[in-house]
Image (cartoon, rainbow, N blue to C red):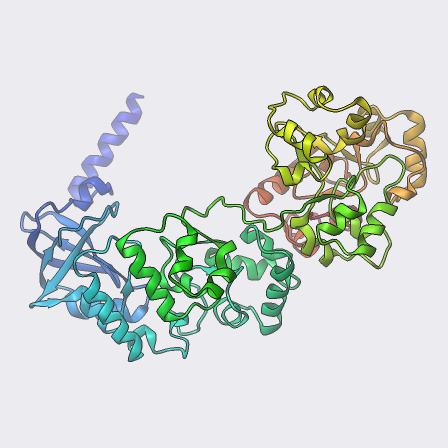
Length: 548
């Protein structure tokens, strides 16, 4: 400890001698408390941020209040030519903004309002996240004029909003602007997302028409939307728009809202935030509102669930009527039911595409994902989920309980009913743990309490592609086995049962990878195994892994 203290002291002394500043914002920022002060511009950091020296010789960081330069290169150049080395006046307009580590001020130079000048010359747009102070109306007028005259950042594209991003290419690559992928038009998707072709934009629209995106990772399930394309664009994607905080760019991607309607939204929330989304229906045309109402919010949208389907079906237990009510085609429903054999319940959605029928494709599974469930959490899932396997009266009873374990269900339903549903329900995230019987060793099967006789017949019959191929009834071990492993959700035990060279380090890397973003395709999985020098492992197990 003494050596450590001596080291710290030494660093501090050297820093003082050399004139270095320890980078602490509390010392460096120096909050400006006066409403009007002079300063000298020492540095221009970007198109809306400067470093100044105050009269007391302290330095401080200042952002030009009410504007956002969007990383536009010309903005930085203009502000540098205008302010660097100049004496300026900093004014607090009386409308405070909690900007964290910056002072948000009006900046005047030689009598010119630089904030307004940046906007009027098209070098910045109104920052809708900031409080709208007394200068808002003036900024708004300047922005409308710049937009009309195609000045500065507005000049690059025919569609003005596509150039707000600060890139003449039209792609969102440099800023925090968002595209709502549930509502953006095909043309916007193609124009604004990097490496998205016209055909891929069509695929995105086709996918969401049948299954709106619940989260941004889901776009990787769109045919042709590779991990490379996803990684280039993920910072710009959203599935739901907060109409109280979204900037003009994001609002434009709500089914290509008109400039007039966007302005109505901005004017309304300038007066007062929206309390609920229905308030929007009195501001914009009803037809526009109906197209976007499922994909907007008045609150933080980070963890919002926008699954649209209200009718859900369980792929192992729901009858044909329930399946078709959940928009499952009749032939598809017939196949799902026909292949329920030998006491086995489906463990993944994708195994439905492995049944050997031409009626069900992987793309069908993607389209119907929001309509189908595999497992049900008795304590947290809603009535729509519960009624996929229970009648409404029973579902209501379950919803009112807080079960400690799934066997408590026997106090609500009969024993025979419990035996029927026990392998598709769970509580407190305590799902059954499986091993993949197509790849597991006999020792791993024995560890799962699978009998010698069952193990022998299973191994003799492998590969087993669908339940009808099972060599025996597996009702008593159904909660221990899978035919396919969902690499996005499988436990360590199940991943280990894939064998063929898979090891603990590789499994840890799989889990770490999927915590960031789910695997979206077998191609992405193949790339992952290649990057981990395990291509040979992938080749051996690829027939038994799925992504949903």
